[in-house]
Length: 128
Image 1 (spheres, rainbow, N blue to C red):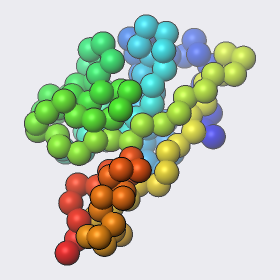
Image 2 (image 1 turned 90 degrees about the vertical axis):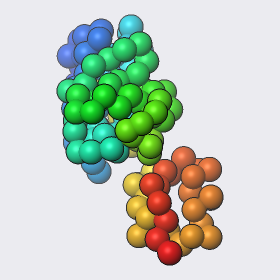
Image 3 (image 1 turned 60 degrees about the vertical axis):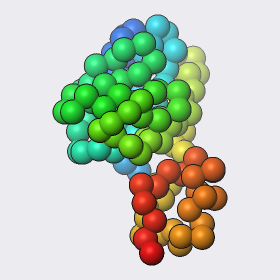
Image 4 (image 1 turned 180 degrees about the vertical axis):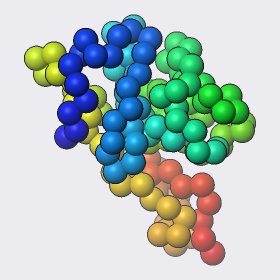
């Protein structure tokens, strides 16, 4: 698990960026914490620098929006979801448990693509 900080370090409506396998953004939505991969899947932009709108974050670069609960984009320009992560609070201290490792198109055979998508390990396209 990754230590994020004290709960008071993440005010309502704000986010923090931490380092895991890849950068992760932790958001406080009305007292509920959510963690997603910090980099927009459309283009390299930090989602923790974006705008929080309810339970979604808007990328500061091209306005792609991602649902903080599922990681799925609401529409173009982003097409690929970001990973979501488990957030735990213990005695006022916030921790993130990273999801399974990132799966890339180069590491998946076409016959496995459906399996990875169903398991929540999103890939943009599959190498042929």
